[in-house]
Amino acid sequence: MRDYRSMLTLTNFIIGFFLLLSGFLLGFDPATSDYPSFYIAGEIVKADQAHLLYDMNTQTDYQAPYRGFTPGDVNNLLIYVNPPHTAIFMLPLTWIPFTVSFFVWYAINLAMLAYFMRLVWNDLGATETANKWLIMSAIFGFHTIATVLYLGTFSILMLLATYQVYRSTQREQWFKAAFWLFIATFKFQFVLFIGLWMLIQRYWRGLFWFALICVGFVGISSLIWGWDMWPNYLASGSSTLNLFDQNGIKPSQTFTLRGTLALWFGAENKQLVNTASQIGLGLAALGFAGLIWRSAKHPQQQAWNYSLAVTFGGLFSLHMYGHDAMLYITPALLLFQLYQQRQQPSWLPKYCLLLPWLSLIGNSLFLDGELGIRLPTLVAISLVVVILRLRPQYQAVRLEPASTT
Image 1: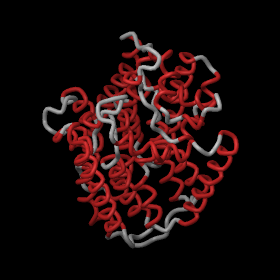
Image 2 (image 1 turned 180 degrees about the vertical axis):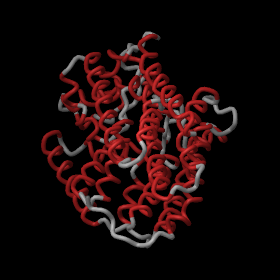
Image 3 (image 1 turned 60 degrees about the vertical axis):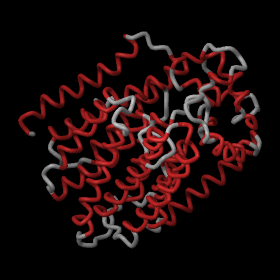
Image 4 (image 1 turned 120 degrees about the vertical axis):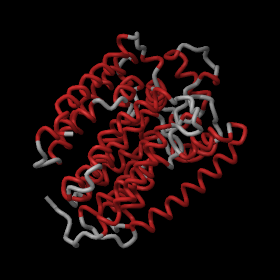
């Protein structure tokens, strides 16, 4: 691998720059992205209609001018399903015209990506510089970054948040860990296993700060915009589960257990798909708890635990599209850092570097699910298999206190 590092690094960077430019060269239009659903959520809150945030007719009226469909045509609505604090987060951008705000958000995403890569570079420590650049190029060349930028989603923020939760807990920076966990709840379904990990590892101070932040934010936001948006969000969950291939909700195109079941059984069996996926989620939670129960708080063991938490969070979530696959960068990075400490198994760094390429091939060649399961889902399953295969090595480490520096 050493002989080809420079060539592979250059190739990754070229692919990354090409993907960043491709959308503009193809006549990209913000109105075709996911961004309008987030933007109008902020507008609804700004208009003091937070109690109607999850009303589809209200969303349709706000979204129609930006996406160019007839007002009142609910069938063309790209529904907003994120928690209320995501809409509140969007408020500052709603003071800017729609198209301008999209490119402001685009620039913010690039800044967050640069900050994330800087964190990773620092965390790699004494790693050989050539290997550092290879890892940076693999992240930058990950095709989902371009998808995130053109869709205007929160996936880069989610990647940064989930990575920061781990870094902060291992440094015993509990308020910081709680803050980033709260940010990660912008896509609540991805953080269930992270929360379970913190609970089982008894990170009580982090959980205390998280609860305090949640209660404080809900209380203050309710005083300003009203309480109704919070129970309305919870009530919208069941109706969202029953949306199949409508309003931007397409379970069969997701890279999850639920997405695979939707491919097998179709939208006409959505009750079966939902029930089976929820059972799978419950069994996965029990299995995860059993695997990490009473595990040592040694840094290597916690890196293993967290890798599994993030991977399970994606694989068993309600929906995970191509741009959400960025979450898997975190477990891949942690696995590589484990390899750096033990220099075994020898195939592990090659596997981690191969993940972005496999995901790109999967999105390009098997988008319609001809295999009955999407290749990126198989990639996520392979990540679980690799993590489980490494378990004996990282259960056998000598117990030492976690670093606080």
